[in-house]
Amino acid sequence: MEKFKIIPVGVVRKGDGEDILEIFPKFRDAADGLHEGDFIKLILWFHKSDTLEKRRVLKVHPHGNPQNPLTGVFATRSPVRPNPLAIYTVRIHRIEESRIYIDPIDADDGTPIADIKIFVERLDCPARRELEEWELDIENARHIGKLNLIPRISEHLDELEEVSPEEFTALIVGLGSKTTYLTAKDLADLIKFLNETYERLPVEIKDKLKSQSS
Image (cartoon, rainbow, N blue to C red):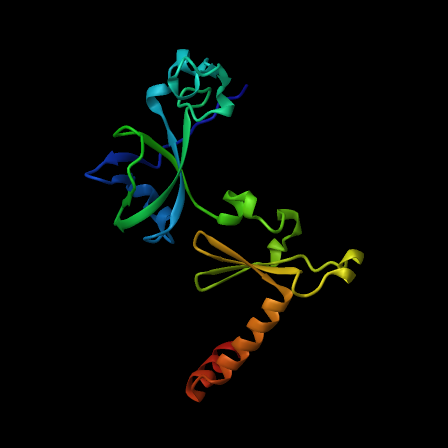
């Protein structure tokens, strides 16, 4: 099997009541767009479990308790596994240059950071998902301000004849880690409200907007 490399993008530092993700300078730009209060998926490389002996372990007693039956590591959160990756969902307290402050986690000082990804509710909490990925019109998704707008694929389905506008999920609205779903009725009401709000804008502002779009 061909081997591949994971290049650390930073390390964990232990703080007083909070931990710090110290991002290496060459990867600092990758953190642009993260904000205080965001939830992130933190992927670490548990380097102290990176030994030939530990990486050969395929079954463990969950929680290290011998009274628990041996269980395959893929069904546990054990740090001992073929590839000692650890995944956390944490909230960002604040960001100071290349240092991201988070809640304390059970990682040692100096633990390498393999990757960081924004937490997305519709992807990371599938029990709350109202639409599957194949139902989404990803090509026509838009980022407007801090909003991530993903429409539903607009295909005609015979069974939709019996679905009311109040039941048909038409749009996913993401704001940071939060996700909400708008029905066709919600969307129509929102469009009406936005049009009314736009009409109430000062004439000078509307003129500037028109000149920008022309």
